[in-house]
Length: 256
Image (cartoon, rainbow, N blue to C red; front, side, top):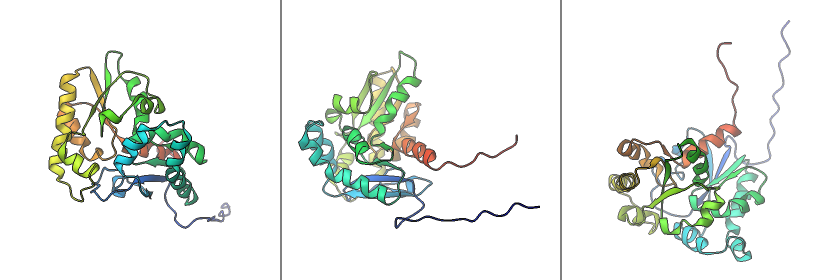
């Protein structure tokens, strides 16, 4: 006798389906090639983007970074990010991230605003990566702007181990798009800039044993960075994929 088929009852409540990860996106018209978190083709699964109006890279990194993250003024300033997170949850997202590693500064604020997991920054990978390395080795972080990556950001991301930090703020092609919002990108030139920064970091700091690309615009160049340095290269896409897999589990299959 065959078991009776179970009835499939679907439950709605929002407008869009099939996604698990919601991404709060900095507003900008610069190109976001595959690998960038603002390009949906970067992932082999659906994601839902929400543009946080009025928040350019400069405002998010520099202006918010200069404020006291525990102040009422800061909490009011990030209200559009909190509202955006709540909107994504209302559309069925099971976890929330952002398009900027500097959003570590308001990780706890986003967590308190929604009832789903939040992983605001790629920097949250750093403690795990550091613990993968022998004690004499260091994690190297390539960031959009080294001077703006403060101890407040590191603490908010749970980073306590020593790290090596370098920035790409002096790279003209990167700056023209990420900071000045130029609507076109010379991909080969940008890739060469990022590779040069990574190679110089490793040459000056031979203790670097792995690299983390903080900025969500840098993963498109990760393969070239790895080829140039021979090191493991981590980025935002790893974190997104890991959390997505936790929110969309599939049964294991195979021989027993």
